[in-house]
Length: 366
Length: 173
Image 1: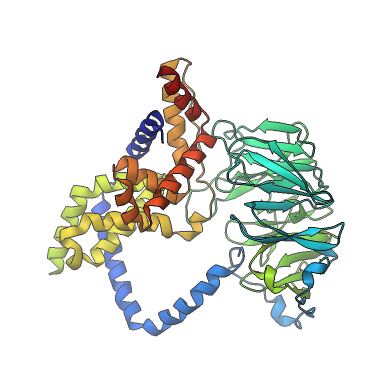
Image 2 (image 1 turned 30 degrees about the horizontal axis):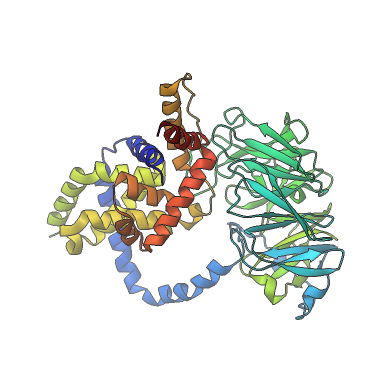
């Protein structure tokens, strides 16, 4: 590390620490908390058998793929109906043909999240999966043969890999980038730039043409999870807006709604009062009247016009395959992908092949 | 016996609380989280006071760092701590530029992942060596170096003016 940079860092760390305000009753509060902790430890020692069971279960919990917050009040509908029919588990040759899911969607990739590792990517032309290795992120377009790939050693760039001919082209995008997300038509990539004094979004076309739009964080206030996502029709991008509530690190910040911006010129277009964050373009119903969002505590099915919560759902990471059908991966350790209706009733379950169970899967229309 | 423990503990927090809170704030990045982090560490210290009374401060510091880095998994999933208010940019000029950089860097530190901010706090607030930093975080010296390097790369992404600092120093040489 160079001298002036190290000096600047030292000053900045001290500046940061200097920002603290004294806490007058620190000792009293710590004493109270310490006493409670001591009482709890004594009680826990008395119930050691129960703790042992939890300790065995915990590693399994940590291995589960991308669990969402568990609903506080699970809906009873699933228990009142017969179990959904389960399709056969794909055999060892599953990668030789597209893995078609209920609702006629298809798995386009199975990759590790936030890190390198061997993954699988669908080559639509050849109708089989290729192994993807050596990149930190692989993001298949929902249509066509392009894959966006990222490499932590090239943090300001993205590459487009065309599976039809293997051609790979790297493009400069910008600084402090989020992972890329494809527009629903597979023609554009969306990045959030978290550069401190240039927060905003970048739309990149597949020929590398970039359009950078700065967004005023004070006017369009967002905290917590603040990546832009596509709207269902791909003409707008969506930014969650923080509501008025006390900030608490232990829960997600309350949302007032989401603000939409034109993907063509970056202008704000409309505000939708949904009380949470949509996971992406497919989290909006085809007719635009409903959406699934991750609320402060739970995944929610909501009306977009009013923000009214209709019910909780098992996960916010859903795909609307039609106006009344949702496709999602069962949370909490299950390996199945499920087609469900809007009440949460499961209609069909598709187990995943063993190789995809611990990977994040990407899906797209067939 | 309980009164003796309470008295010793209270005296310790009264004497060292502000210094520890400063470390907690550098680690957590905001007042609320810093208070929570420190109170949690102090509570653990109180519960074990008879065993650690002569060595309380290193014990509390270790808990602070461990809780920040390995605990609070829910928070660790967040890529970045939000920066609610951006500092106003001062007028141009070298003095203004440096002040601007300083403010931006301070805000950018808040956006680092917990482990990277912990490494920078140990190295630059506590002025510990790479080896001592590694010992406190329970990792190898190479990991400390790589975390520091990633932190710097992230800061350069967030604050491009950091690159200019290096360039300016090279020009002056």
